[in-house]
Image 1 (spheres, rainbow, N blue to C red):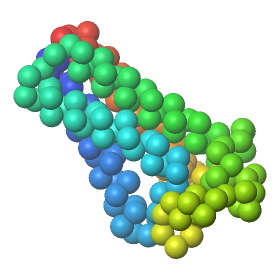
Image 2 (cartoon, one colour):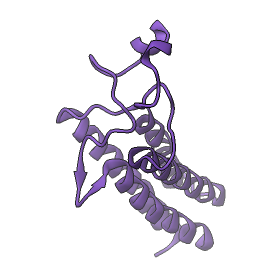
Image 3 (cartoon, rainbow, N blue to C red):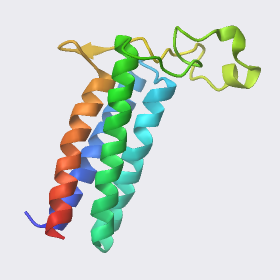
Image 4 (tube, rainbow, N blue to C red):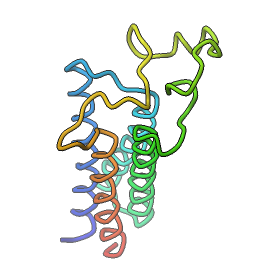
Length: 151
């Protein structure tokens, strides 16, 4: 495959992961703060895919690999928070004191309740959504790098 096709394939992977996240949200699984952090690099990768479609440049492939790496790294961090390997943000984990939150912090949460970052709301084969994002995004990093090498 040429660089452009690989770049579009990788950007399409981010689009599918975002569509999956929205589907879970629609099914009643609201995202936590860290879930939102994992989405932003995918949005950037999707925009890069549009740019590659319009006019491919080597920098777009490098930025795409960076975006995929960032979301994968956040997914690994989120997984560690879920498994209790390390502490997460005090504003969305059980280790945090909700009394320490300001009114603005409480109002900035999704839905009618605070979605905790250290609680797994859904898992498949014992792997949480954050972990699946980390795994699939790591695969996207490899595709972006292959595209960059061919650009």
